[in-house]
Image (cartoon, rainbow, N blue to C red; front, top):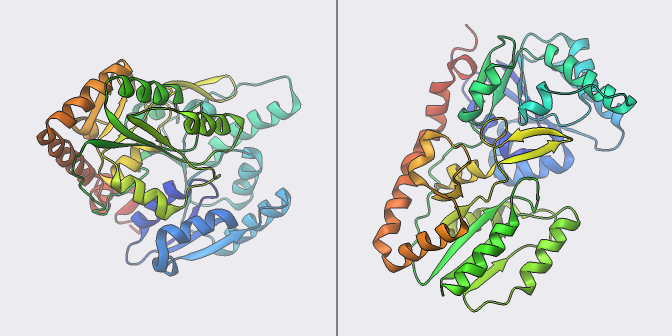
Length: 376
């Protein structure tokens, strides 16, 4: 079966999709951009040669879409899996309309942004709105990365098939840690105020300092705007006898460094902005209409994690998750871990057990319409 996977942005989210379709009898082509292709190679290493790669140019919008059309027309895949579309919806819809492929599956990262698009008396906004509506019609099936999003997606797809392919697979990447006097807390993801509340990170550091709790907090992501630069500046200016906030002065954190910090973490801290606006004034709710990629960092590395109590998470992850109402709750929880080291192995074991729900075999079993008996 000829399968084409399209991804020019979220390489980490397309990685498990490629792995899941990598079965005997499948021929996989990945269409991507030059920069994203580099990150794919970092992830796959020598195994990248298992797949065919089509790298489209970043410069020239019309050239990009013309080459995309030519590639898809030449290959005529049995299944086109679009993992991310965040702009130019009209042009993607035009390509799909011109091709009339038999099966197109698209991952929806922000459900309301796509399905609740609103008409505006502005030429550009009107084009975006029209493009989204047309694209929805040209896609045959939809996917979300979190099972908590699936019920809401099913109310929007007008009876088209809806899938849940998680944003990570677990491949036994398990590095248990011993607890000592210092706990390593990792906050993965780019420094984006729409997704994570970094004021909570600084509050955690301040309260830990007062309680004489030794924390090393790693902001494991690059920055892309003035806000991110401000977070880096504040982190470097932090004066504390017990807490340290470490961050990166780069746009992107290299894959090897990212994996090392995740493997060495005791807990993953996700100070999620539960109610947010990613797409103009259209509201999104993490866990319901949108999912944090941090959840899949947790799954991939089998780590216990900490989230706000209002964040909806998968039931399959609940036993390795600590939910807090106030930042002081986290400090009290972590102090208990330090004072009684026998507490921590339980959290690690639960994290490992939960990540084992996301092996390649188990995800395929849960999605037979996508991964099993595809030629029948």
